[in-house]
Amino acid sequence: MKDSFTKYHPFINLIYFVLVIGFSLVLTHPLAQAISLMCAVIYAVSINGKKSVMFLLKYCLPMVLLTAFINPAFNHEGITTLLYFPNGNPLTLESILYGLSAGVMIVTTLLWFSVFNRVMTTDKFICLFGKVIPALSLVLSMSLRFVPKFKTQMQTVTEAQRSIGRDVSSGSLLQRTKTAIHIFSIMITWSFENAIETADSMKSRGYGLKGRTTFSIYRFDKRDKYTLIWLLVCGVVIIAGILLSLFDFSFFPGIGYSDFSITAIPFYCVYFVLCITPVIINYKEKRKWETSVSEM
Image 1 (spheres, rainbow, N blue to C red):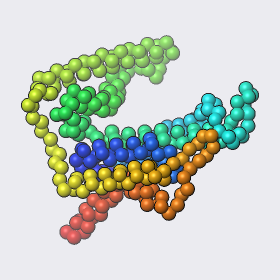
Image 2 (image 1 turned 30 degrees about the vertical axis):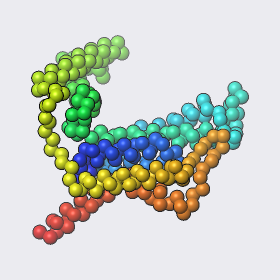
Image 3 (image 1 turned 60 degrees about the vertical axis):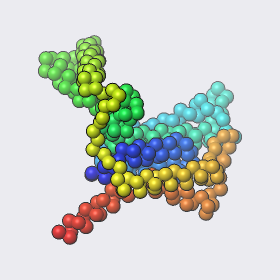
Image 4 (image 1 turned 180 degrees about the vertical axis):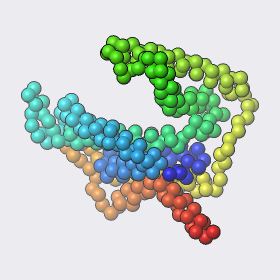
């Protein structure tokens, strides 16, 4: 599925992810975490398809369960004791719930960053930071490109080594280890050479020199202006809710949270709409396209 939100100005994309990732790390209330996780899953599935579902099942769910089990083994705070370990340390309900909350927060952040890597391409980083911090923007853009490029090159090298009888999936353990080390050595050499070539290429083009102009296909239009106002309004409203203690939730020494009243409902609704904004944009663009096609 095409993501219409990626066509917005890079500054809009950056502001959106700063807000949703920042609030996902700050808000520990279960309802706020559920909203962020649900919206992250919906957005990730809408642009990544089945890959996001497999990622959730293979990595995210086990990670939540793992943190829920590991945290009580080291954290024994809390007033609700369920049982005692053989060494005398208590297992508390608060430590289990805190582990679940931490696992959900990690998974939600990973999902947002997976979408972030899909939306915030290297050219957008260059557009945003190329003039202000050219060296850092180049490093960031190279870092974002490195993982998929490294993966592709790794497959190429592995197939080439397999064609000459060096297969990491066959032979004795010692042979497979030697082959894996050899492939890894090739990849490290390739990584250094690629970084040097990229640096030399950018230097030869005058990247980072004073007065050098840059070309960008992105223009900040009226649509971007209205979206920026909307994101800032949502951010201000949520920050106001935080200052009013409407999102408060604590695990230790006992479970404590702010009363969920009618006053808090609008703030949670704003948070939900903020997180789901790209999906709403995609739906509106899809409906607009279908309407225009039906009128032909």
